[in-house]
Length: 127
Image (cartoon, rainbow, N blue to C red; front, side, top):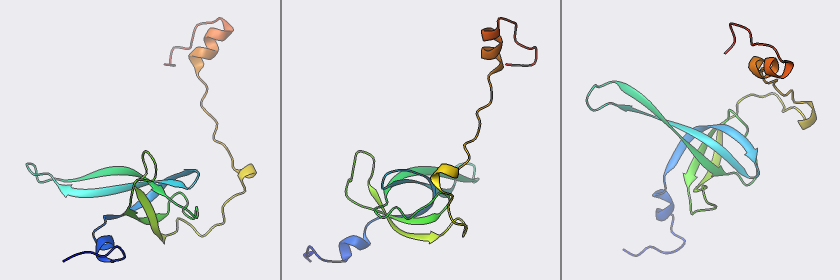
């Protein structure tokens, strides 16, 4: 049976996954974490294994924490072989903050570097 170029049977064979968006900082690209549960063949314990996929998001609709459905597609770039099909569930209903007002987390201070710069010995409890 010959497949025609516009046939939907070829699309039905493409892999689909459901995962959570962990990053949307790139232009038109999101990173989706997909978890699979399987039973260990020898120990019969249920194990979860996670994979991250770079996914093409043309409209840039997905936000961090959203549950999305992705589909395998032709290679779009070096790492992107998946595209966004739909946003299954939104992370929250709150509107996003404007870019200028987002609070940036402060990095913890390194006590050793500070002590060495000041010319004194580091404290006993610091690493």
